[in-house]
Length: 156
Length: 156
Image (cartoon, rainbow over all chains, first blue to last red):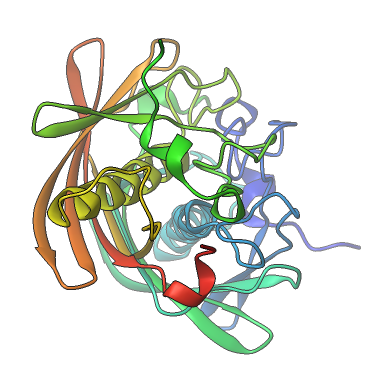
């Protein structure tokens, strides 16, 4: 049986995000999973996700870090409440701030690996740090401050 | 005669960026212009550029701020050298770091206006601050540290 990703647990109404919504047929549809204390997402950019030729577009890198970190925030919030992602109420996070440091140009053509870890959980806020690498080389670091979506936007 | 955008001056080899390359047919193809001391870019998101339904995807906002600011960095660097964008050598900037604060959910459906101003030019580095608004409402603030692309990557 295939393991479900964080995003596979999002309620349908909150699954239209261009970056991570499984119901957005135009979107990136990223998938995030726990791997020990970290979360991991593997994404293969399209040939047109280019910056200067041969390198990955920085906006895509920002998008992957953003959605992988908000997904990680949700998964961590369930853990903090001592319950699994298939239980109610559903938890979903929005981005309050996003920071990305581009350490070196990211070669285009191989899968990107984004790994994230939770730095802080406090009330409705989760701070998540991420690293993006390809072929074993660290190319970018990011940090997301994620805020829980208000209940009235989350369907039961 | 239509005014040319910053991106219309990029050399062909550096015009494939997913965010701002006029030769990337899958990309956003943003256009940036001076408006007094500020630069401005107007962009109408597609219906599928959604976060939660009815609101603009944060990764798109990050991408728009990123490319508009690197374009502004290039335009400002020409100004600093006392020459116009149709002169050689061509100047083009990459993103060293990107920060976005999402101040309020950005409604989807109306054009977004991104305005940027140069905070600092020092050597090959330009720091650019941006504000993103729609229907007159400020929704996000950003800052980009842009670094001039090495000459060997810029065709004569």
